[in-house]
Amino acid sequence: MAEQKETSKNPKATELVERLGEVVEGRRELLIITHTHPDPDTIASAAALQLLVKQCFGVNSSIAYSGIIARAENRAMVQKLNITLKEYNRIKLSRYDCIALVDSQPGAGNNVLDADSDCDIVIDHHPRREDTKAKLVVIDPEIGATATILIRWLEAADVKMPAEIATALAYAISSETQNMYREAAREDIKAYLSVYVQASIRTLSEIINANLPHYYFKQLGNALNNAFVHGNIIVAHLTTIWHPEIVAEMADFFLKHERIGAVLCTGCYKQSLILSIRTVGSRKNAGELIKQLPLNPDHVGGHDRTAGGFLPLQGKSDEEIQRDVLRLQNAFAALLGNDSPTWKRLLEE
Image (cartoon, rainbow, N blue to C red; front, side, top):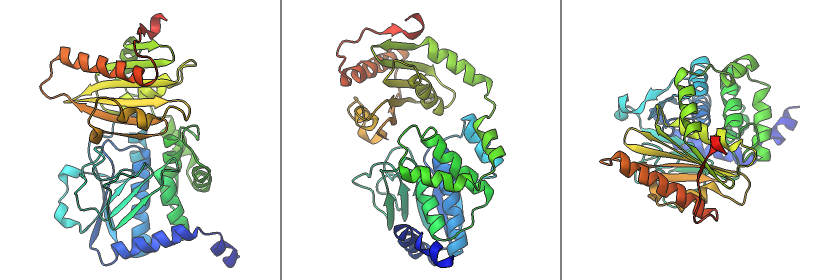
């Protein structure tokens, strides 16, 4: 039986775990950084990496995040699974002599590291940036979730997963791929099934069905009232938003419309216009679409059916912001073959 288990391991994952050990060997403490406004994939991947380096190499670590954790399901995930996260701006960086970034890359614009920052480990599933560098860079854009990479590693290293970590990883993959509907590869399905049987199903269902705060329904009403349609495109500007993640939530929501193939949602958060794009099918690559909008390429990113970014708004009046929003909406429509869109209110269609 032992030989059969050994031969079933992923040789590539085993090699990468060994390389990870070479990077963290002799280090005092590892700092694992998530992307800004962390989602389940980056949180679970960070927690899995923390477990791996402790169990295999005896290295302690902390997980740090920037932005806020506001989405109800994400807050429930952190609380119910006892995942300890520290705010990046409150940690003492001199305490750490090794840095890892998960589910993002330095300079991507959605994390605290710029392209020239010292980073020892990068683990991600988004397309590789030309300037990404580290002692260990593991990027697999063929899979739908970074959590899948960490599951491979934990299995290759024979690390026993606590139910909390298995639950986090299962939720990460299901959330990132929308229950295998969006960008899920065979590897994601295999990884999901392997951790699902080790997860706490009750806790997983409590996370998925987390109670929604009152402001969610106010934002939903605002999104519906400000949604416009042309052909198979929906655009919606949520005006002032309570937290950035609501823009992506509403984009996912509008994409469920039976006649819609592409969605652009925007919302004003502090001094930025937050953008989220969703598309249906492989012919409309969201990551490529957002790069063609009139935005700073360092402020956007995405792949296949999902993309996001931001536009700085410092010093702009409400009228200027509204013009920016309309300019982006029309540019989005033009990229999809609609040069002169006639926007109609979705609720009046």
